[in-house]
Image (cartoon, rainbow, N blue to C red; front, side, top):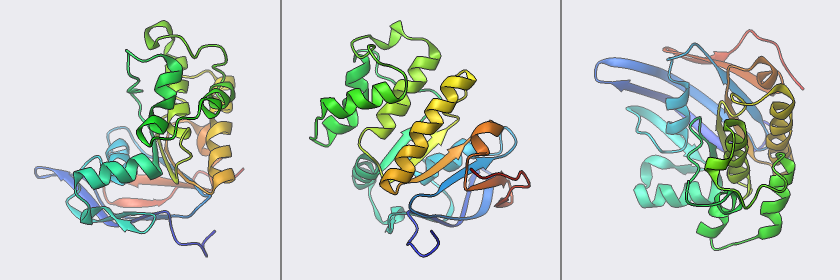
Length: 227
Protein backbone atom coordinates (compact mmCIF):
# COMPACT_ATOMS: atom_id res chain seq x y z
CA UNK A 1 0.00 0.00 0.00
CA UNK A 2 2.88 2.41 0.73
CA UNK A 3 3.84 2.52 -3.00
CA UNK A 4 0.55 4.25 -3.90
CA UNK A 5 0.14 8.03 -3.56
CA UNK A 6 -1.89 8.77 -0.41
CA UNK A 7 -5.58 9.44 -0.76
CA UNK A 8 -5.43 11.53 2.40
CA UNK A 9 -2.39 13.49 3.56
CA UNK A 10 -2.20 15.65 6.69
CA UNK A 11 0.99 17.59 7.34
CA UNK A 12 1.70 19.33 10.65
CA UNK A 13 -2.01 19.93 11.14
CA UNK A 14 -3.05 21.94 14.15
CA UNK A 15 -6.15 23.63 15.51
CA UNK A 16 -7.04 25.68 18.56
CA UNK A 17 -10.04 27.51 19.94
CA UNK A 18 -8.77 30.90 21.04
CA UNK A 19 -5.72 30.19 23.17
CA UNK A 20 -6.77 26.60 23.85
CA UNK A 21 -5.09 24.01 21.60
CA UNK A 22 -7.21 21.12 20.35
CA UNK A 23 -4.43 19.17 18.62
CA UNK A 24 -1.14 20.01 16.95
CA UNK A 25 1.57 18.51 14.74
CA UNK A 26 -0.70 15.85 13.24
CA UNK A 27 1.01 14.05 10.36
CA UNK A 28 -0.90 11.27 8.64
CA UNK A 29 -1.00 9.62 5.25
CA UNK A 30 -3.69 7.08 4.32
CA UNK A 31 -3.22 4.97 1.20
CA UNK A 32 -5.87 3.61 -1.19
CA UNK A 33 -7.48 0.51 0.29
CA UNK A 34 -6.20 1.26 3.79
CA UNK A 35 -8.30 1.34 6.98
CA UNK A 36 -7.01 3.57 9.78
CA UNK A 37 -8.74 3.74 13.16
CA UNK A 38 -8.22 6.77 15.40
CA UNK A 39 -8.71 6.41 19.13
CA UNK A 40 -8.15 8.74 22.07
CA UNK A 41 -9.70 10.18 25.19
CA UNK A 42 -13.08 11.91 24.97
CA UNK A 43 -12.69 15.60 24.20
CA UNK A 44 -9.26 15.30 22.58
CA UNK A 45 -10.58 16.48 19.21
CA UNK A 46 -11.12 13.30 17.19
CA UNK A 47 -14.38 14.52 15.63
CA UNK A 48 -12.84 17.94 14.96
CA UNK A 49 -9.92 16.23 13.23
CA UNK A 50 -12.34 14.31 10.98
CA UNK A 51 -14.13 17.55 10.12
CA UNK A 52 -10.80 19.12 9.17
CA UNK A 53 -9.98 16.11 6.98
CA UNK A 54 -13.21 16.75 5.06
CA UNK A 55 -12.71 20.50 4.88
CA UNK A 56 -15.80 21.05 7.02
CA UNK A 57 -13.82 22.79 9.75
CA UNK A 58 -10.92 25.23 9.57
CA UNK A 59 -7.46 24.54 10.94
CA UNK A 60 -4.79 26.98 12.11
CA UNK A 61 -1.63 25.52 10.62
CA UNK A 62 -0.55 22.68 8.39
CA UNK A 63 -2.25 21.22 5.34
CA UNK A 64 -4.90 18.71 4.25
CA UNK A 65 -4.89 17.07 0.82
CA UNK A 66 -7.45 14.64 -0.62
CA UNK A 67 -6.41 12.62 -3.66
CA UNK A 68 -3.57 15.07 -4.28
CA UNK A 69 -5.73 18.21 -3.99
CA UNK A 70 -4.70 20.71 -1.29
CA UNK A 71 -7.91 21.89 0.38
CA UNK A 72 -6.35 25.23 1.31
CA UNK A 73 -6.35 26.16 -2.38
CA UNK A 74 -10.13 25.62 -2.75
CA UNK A 75 -12.98 27.97 -1.96
CA UNK A 76 -16.10 26.76 -0.13
CA UNK A 77 -17.93 25.77 -3.33
CA UNK A 78 -14.92 23.86 -4.63
CA UNK A 79 -14.52 22.03 -1.32
CA UNK A 80 -18.20 21.11 -1.38
CA UNK A 81 -17.80 19.74 -4.90
CA UNK A 82 -14.75 17.70 -3.89
CA UNK A 83 -16.64 16.23 -0.92
CA UNK A 84 -19.64 15.46 -3.11
CA UNK A 85 -17.50 13.56 -5.60
CA UNK A 86 -14.85 11.89 -3.45
CA UNK A 87 -15.80 11.82 0.24
CA UNK A 88 -18.32 9.78 2.22
CA UNK A 89 -18.91 11.02 5.78
CA UNK A 90 -20.75 9.21 8.57
CA UNK A 91 -21.60 11.71 11.31
CA UNK A 92 -22.32 10.81 14.93
CA UNK A 93 -25.59 12.78 14.70
CA UNK A 94 -26.73 10.99 11.48
CA UNK A 95 -27.89 14.20 9.66
CA UNK A 96 -30.67 12.22 7.97
CA UNK A 97 -33.22 14.51 6.29
CA UNK A 98 -36.64 14.05 7.97
CA UNK A 99 -38.76 14.94 4.92
CA UNK A 100 -37.13 12.28 2.71
CA UNK A 101 -37.80 8.57 3.02
CA UNK A 102 -35.00 6.10 3.68
CA UNK A 103 -34.29 5.32 0.01
CA UNK A 104 -34.30 9.02 -0.90
CA UNK A 105 -31.88 9.81 1.92
CA UNK A 106 -29.51 7.09 0.75
CA UNK A 107 -29.84 8.19 -2.88
CA UNK A 108 -29.08 11.85 -2.12
CA UNK A 109 -25.34 11.80 -3.01
CA UNK A 110 -26.16 10.17 -6.36
CA UNK A 111 -28.90 12.72 -7.05
CA UNK A 112 -26.52 15.61 -6.30
CA UNK A 113 -24.07 14.12 -8.81
CA UNK A 114 -26.81 13.60 -11.40
CA UNK A 115 -26.28 9.83 -11.27
CA UNK A 116 -29.49 8.23 -9.92
CA UNK A 117 -29.19 4.48 -9.44
CA UNK A 118 -32.11 2.80 -7.65
CA UNK A 119 -30.47 -0.62 -7.91
CA UNK A 120 -27.35 0.54 -6.09
CA UNK A 121 -29.47 2.16 -3.38
CA UNK A 122 -31.41 -1.07 -2.85
CA UNK A 123 -28.25 -3.16 -2.79
CA UNK A 124 -26.78 -0.97 -0.04
CA UNK A 125 -29.99 -1.05 1.98
CA UNK A 126 -29.81 -4.84 1.81
CA UNK A 127 -26.12 -4.81 2.76
CA UNK A 128 -26.68 -2.79 5.94
CA UNK A 129 -29.78 -4.73 7.00
CA UNK A 130 -32.51 -2.30 5.94
CA UNK A 131 -34.27 -4.43 3.33
CA UNK A 132 -37.91 -3.44 2.94
CA UNK A 133 -37.55 -0.14 4.81
CA UNK A 134 -36.83 2.14 1.86
CA UNK A 135 -40.27 3.80 1.91
CA UNK A 136 -40.21 4.61 5.64
CA UNK A 137 -39.57 8.10 6.96
CA UNK A 138 -36.67 8.65 9.40
CA UNK A 139 -39.03 9.28 12.33
CA UNK A 140 -40.31 5.71 11.91
CA UNK A 141 -36.85 4.24 12.53
CA UNK A 142 -34.82 3.43 15.61
CA UNK A 143 -31.50 5.12 16.35
CA UNK A 144 -29.61 2.09 15.14
CA UNK A 145 -31.58 2.01 11.90
CA UNK A 146 -30.92 5.72 11.34
CA UNK A 147 -27.21 5.08 11.77
CA UNK A 148 -27.39 2.42 9.06
CA UNK A 149 -29.20 4.85 6.75
CA UNK A 150 -26.36 7.34 7.27
CA UNK A 151 -23.77 4.66 6.52
CA UNK A 152 -25.53 3.52 3.35
CA UNK A 153 -25.74 7.16 2.21
CA UNK A 154 -21.99 7.60 2.81
CA UNK A 155 -21.21 4.52 0.70
CA UNK A 156 -23.67 4.85 -2.17
CA UNK A 157 -21.56 7.04 -4.49
CA UNK A 158 -18.49 4.84 -3.96
CA UNK A 159 -16.29 7.62 -2.54
CA UNK A 160 -12.51 7.59 -2.66
CA UNK A 161 -12.29 8.61 1.02
CA UNK A 162 -14.58 7.40 3.81
CA UNK A 163 -14.64 9.30 7.11
CA UNK A 164 -16.68 7.73 9.90
CA UNK A 165 -17.30 9.16 13.37
CA UNK A 166 -18.33 6.36 15.77
CA UNK A 167 -20.38 4.59 13.06
CA UNK A 168 -21.20 1.57 15.24
CA UNK A 169 -21.86 3.47 18.47
CA UNK A 170 -25.66 2.97 18.41
CA UNK A 171 -25.64 -0.59 17.12
CA UNK A 172 -25.83 -4.00 18.74
CA UNK A 173 -22.74 -6.21 18.23
CA UNK A 174 -24.24 -8.26 15.38
CA UNK A 175 -25.41 -5.22 13.41
CA UNK A 176 -22.15 -3.39 14.19
CA UNK A 177 -20.22 -6.27 12.63
CA UNK A 178 -22.42 -6.11 9.50
CA UNK A 179 -21.86 -2.37 9.20
CA UNK A 180 -18.11 -2.79 9.55
CA UNK A 181 -18.28 -5.48 6.86
CA UNK A 182 -19.98 -2.98 4.53
CA UNK A 183 -17.46 -0.24 5.28
CA UNK A 184 -14.53 -2.58 4.75
CA UNK A 185 -15.98 -4.06 1.57
CA UNK A 186 -16.23 -0.54 0.11
CA UNK A 187 -12.66 0.22 1.17
CA UNK A 188 -11.10 -2.93 -0.25
CA UNK A 189 -13.29 -3.36 -3.34
CA UNK A 190 -12.99 0.17 -4.66
CA UNK A 191 -9.55 1.10 -3.34
CA UNK A 192 -11.01 3.72 -1.03
CA UNK A 193 -9.34 4.96 2.14
CA UNK A 194 -11.24 4.60 5.43
CA UNK A 195 -10.58 6.71 8.52
CA UNK A 196 -12.66 5.68 11.50
CA UNK A 197 -12.94 7.46 14.85
CA UNK A 198 -14.09 4.94 17.42
CA UNK A 199 -14.19 3.84 21.04
CA UNK A 200 -15.06 0.31 19.91
CA UNK A 201 -12.24 -2.16 20.44
CA UNK A 202 -13.95 -4.59 18.04
CA UNK A 203 -14.02 -1.98 15.25
CA UNK A 204 -10.45 -0.82 15.88
CA UNK A 205 -9.22 -4.42 15.89
CA UNK A 206 -10.10 -4.70 12.19
CA UNK A 207 -7.99 -1.71 11.16
CA UNK A 208 -4.67 -1.84 9.34
CA UNK A 209 -3.37 0.79 11.76
CA UNK A 210 -4.68 2.09 15.07
CA UNK A 211 -3.54 5.62 15.89
CA UNK A 212 -4.00 7.53 19.12
CA UNK A 213 -4.73 11.25 18.97
CA UNK A 214 -3.49 13.52 21.74
CA UNK A 215 -3.06 17.25 22.07
CA UNK A 216 0.54 16.86 20.89
CA UNK A 217 -0.16 14.87 17.74
CA UNK A 218 -1.00 11.39 16.54
CA UNK A 219 0.97 8.19 16.94
CA UNK A 220 0.65 4.42 16.64
CA UNK A 221 -1.47 3.12 19.48
CA UNK A 222 -0.27 0.36 21.76
CA UNK A 223 -3.41 -1.65 21.11
CA UNK A 224 -2.35 -4.42 18.75
CA UNK A 225 -4.69 -5.21 15.94
CA UNK A 226 -5.10 -6.49 12.41
CA UNK A 227 -7.67 -8.37 10.48
